[in-house]
Length: 548
Image (cartoon, rainbow, N blue to C red; front, side):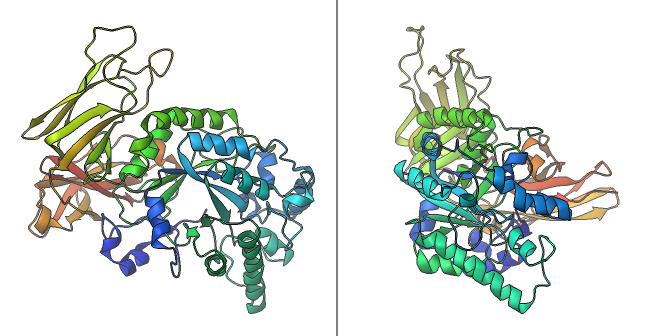
């Protein structure tokens, strides 16, 4: 999947696009216009999660989806296109079971790879024989997916790649991710090829709710999709879709993050590292706290069935969502996305959900107290823990498990007990959600931070930042977090953040910190933070390339 830097886009779109204004987010987005209807983008803002399904004819090999064709030998390429379809038979693909499981796990839509970069089509297309009906499976698999997804009450999403390696191969054009030397005649044929395929997808499967366009050229696909399905929501191709990572700060525009359950998009039977169920739940919470949606990816095995590792994690997410669904659906960001390791979502007119993320060592029947600095109570404030009545705990009838709070000058103190048995061993490790009703924020506007550029200094690296709305928020001090950068996929497995010293903010909102003793031959990522009325607020992260 292609990644680009949106610096020019951000400059063009203006600072209002982000809560963290003028910062850079890695993504691929529209090179042209956006005809998404406001109500469709509003739907995405209210939607916690979707399921992404990556599937392709090369799932039989357990290798990267499509990309092995780039730079491949003639022998590999010929056998890929001519031999793999002869043995591809996903007879165990059960879209009904997948859709029902996705719904239990809190997904509101499913996006399926109708055609990935290799060019293999999962529908009965008239444009090419490189499709599912010319395999032993014979049937239109996409039709089955659409029917099952709708029957489960979920929205239907299509992934489509206009970048097509099979088309290039048929035209004796070397397969590459950046083909730039096409003749005018071939460019026209390429666009027409994608137009016809998009027309088939938009005309033959009823209402399509979501379209994820991955690769170029996009414009023909966008124009055709919006013309034939005016209510469709185009995600990649029109809005922000930062891949394999989450933004460092709140984003006010609609956005989603496609993230793999392991490290691979397609099923990889060996040498993959799955995130735990708890990590996936935490990613979902973090996405919601920053105003976005998590598009969680799975990849069926070659026979079409989900691997046990994938099903099991979705079941764990289903258990958590069953308890805490109201904190995910129809919620928005709070004035700050988090305080330390407690994340927030908010539902107007005054309900706050506080997610205690590090709950794995929180024992059942144990009382914990938390001071929330960004929250203040009112005369009608109420507190509870989602899923439990806070009156009864199994086997301990005399234990006080009530939920309560106190208002202090520096914030509201909440005190709750983990009082619901979820696992047999009483060790449910996933985030606990505290619901606080009828509250107000301590401040109406949070500091908006720009993580600035860096420059070499005599004694180290000088990091720069700025509070863009300093005159109205007046945070007291600022600094930076930093850690070694492990790469895009490895970000979710990276080291803990380290904190620099804090410094006084200048009257124009700027600040800088000298970072010493960085290791050579190591890249680093860093992000700003500022202290506003004792609340620490973070900005987007940036990267210092490898130091030599």
